[in-house]
Amino acid sequence: MKMTKRRQFLSLLGIGLGGAGLTLTKANAHHTDTHFEDKAAHRLVYQCNKADHDYIEHLLFSCGEMLRKYGDDIELVVAAFGPGLNLLAKRPKRSISPLHQQRVKSLSAYGVRFQACGNTMISMKWTEIDLIEEAVQVPIGVDGIMQLQESGFSYISL
Image (cartoon, rainbow, N blue to C red; front, top):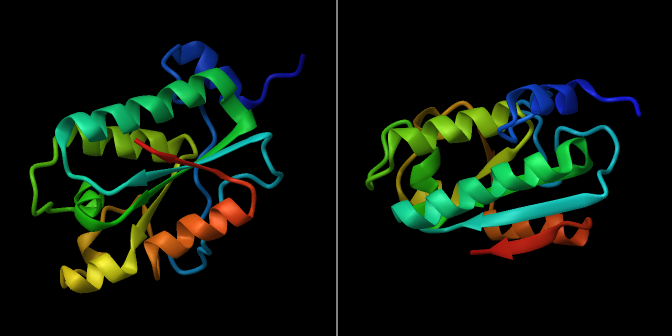
């Protein structure tokens, strides 16, 4: 069986955060754009709407486990809005663990897409400058979730 670069990297690391990088730029991102050229068999969008430590820990752990299990055969998106947007902030207004932000960077490097809700950003008086570079701004976070579902993503709310 031919192993992709991402799957090979997953095997070497043994931690579920495999190899290919995100190729989107903030300027050209669309709600349903992901890092894959072809549709993966498994497609999940996670809702992240809380700034609670245990909630975020569970969400990020779940993403890593799904990557470890499915490797190149899964597309993952984390849609952050409301208080959950703090996970994607350079200077969060709520208590966000630096370890969680490092995990976002790692997961993003291995293909997980992190969407930031533009409406929440407006209400918080944030701009794209306030977000970590791994975040991709979408106009309306919930609309992004809906569009992903309409394109075949399963919706996960923890």
